[in-house]
Image (cartoon, rainbow, N blue to C red; front, top):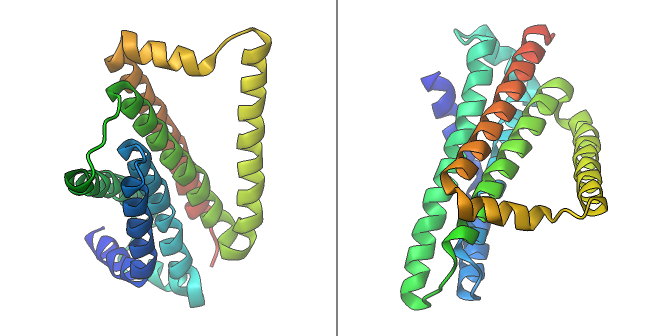
Length: 218
């Protein structure tokens, strides 16, 4: 799997302009007074999309078929993509925190710790959700058809979120306030539940991607 990791690192070098734009926008947000957690969240979500670009590169000119002729199993390929996604999320958190510290030396900012935890965990879940949905779709449908499939998937997620909010409103439940109270009352439980949900999403997505790759014909 080390060879796959090195391959993707070289592929990501082609995204230097994209990464530079993300860094520039993040610095601009910080200088404008945005909450550092929001900037870290932005970087994390954007970097998680890079995993899909590596799959697209692999599929060009039957590259994936050639790759699997080498001593690389389909399971290793899928495992490496999810490991890459997690690695990019962690890298985005570290890079975002470093930028926040550097910019704070120029323009100090104050933010609530509870709000930071909520935004950061929500961003982790969003990044995990993006990867959990897009990786199996990309593997199943390829670069062209996956765009339509992703739009449908995003629409379904948005529709589900809309109905959840509507049901909560009909029962006079404030979802946002409930999350804030949970953070204030038991921060460890809140973070633990969020990480469990993220792990479950990744686990289900990984199992689906593995089945797709096993049945994939070249």
